[in-house]
Image: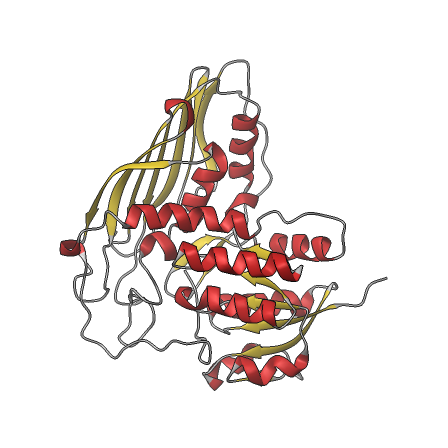
Length: 358
């Protein structure tokens, strides 16, 4: 028998509240506290679990695990804080906004003998796991081309004045906040990618964000693999599509739907589509949605890893690869597509984690 893993959640917004609920219900964990500068969020914690406005005030709880659920721009420094406290860290996507800061956290965690877990829960989706099996088993033959398309909505209901959402320093842009899960799937499926070209647009967010709201990226992988990634947050009213097409010398397959939750078609030599497990529903943020809610699978893996019976399904280096790719893409982002907000600056700093959510 093991004692429950003492766990602390930084940021009690949409994602942080989900972490808190899962930790409180999981027999392998004990939720010992939550941190958020906004007292209105503290009610998401179960009765008897203390809340704090600042991380340092919660340090005396001596958590073994810290969940970083704050705005993107705070993730790496708060993961460092957790490691220096002697804790392991679960870091929501993206792992950070600067690859060099992510590498620093990874090095410090390795030196301290602590685990970093990336929340890359789309890898648990049954369609994604099927694609992984097909690629790993070379069922598609030589892979020639991969196309990813994500057409989503993020409008004034999401980008509120004064919020961290929409700011370069805390949000970073849609490739970090909305679509890093799908870029992770792309790298997870086909390996390292080089950026050949990129085009960015700003159709609807000139005054609500400090960055673009769409683009088209052309990439090249191993053995002359061609890949493309098209995305937008300017769809009217709701998220519309998340799609990936793999085409090889012996077949092709498409996973699609709003959140890549089903196999739309497949034509592969000597292969028939199996019956897949049900897909988890999308994360519901009240007014908008994100990709599939597989956080319970993440915490199962965290518990098994910390008890010595498994390895991390997604660790710091896994999460870093997506940050590195986005950083290379955004080096090509021209100033003319960047929006400008006339709003109160968003709050930040390790002393003030805030509500997070994609």
